[in-house]
Length: 301
View: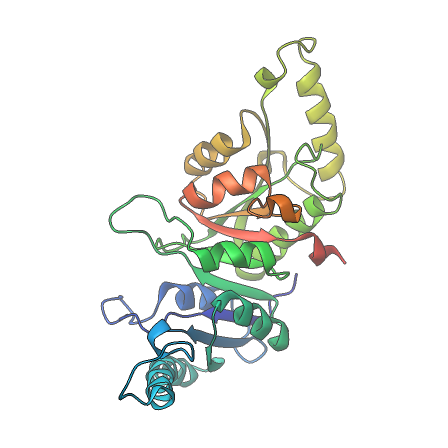
């Protein structure tokens, strides 16, 4: 996972003037990922849609095509201001505006055409709730985007960045065999590129199988975990085998080490249960407070 082409989804309708640097936090974090300004290409995209400007909406006395062009021009102007400011700082950055419903389909298409190494989407909180519940577009990106997807929250990253890679070497949630490797490789690339601390975590709950012989569950998970990490040069302090449910472990242990980001895998289920993206991921995505980097099995191809 070499991060040289970054696509950032911007909500150009928002006012970023109150931000300390006048930038949306998704762009601020994208810039933290840039090691070489000349070699790394950043593309900002804003995909707009308003139902009252759609072709299916009918009313008397309005030129909807003209209004839609004016709407997109406003989005474009906001994006160009961000681009001009960062170009002046030496970044290789551009922008593009689109119109689509559903938005996520065009976002995925634009990311693939750009050949992005990473797609960044901001998850904004609802009102004053503590949690950043994913919007419909964010959920659909988790399901359908084949690229690494970084869902960012409102907190700035620490220095150095603290990353938690969540793995499941026994594949108890039916994950493809290569997904854990994709997760670890992605986390290593990220921390090496910008400088950071990496922790690899596997959580299991022995109490979930109360009739198993004492210690058997832990031994099984420990053996699988050690086998998974044996091909990497990790320090013992970076490896954590936790006797806890995965969701609780990611929340509590992440807070304990002050992690900035969780790297985890997500898989789409069958069409019958396509709302699910993995039993751990579906519970964590809405409620974990840190940023989440979603890796997909296709990244192993």
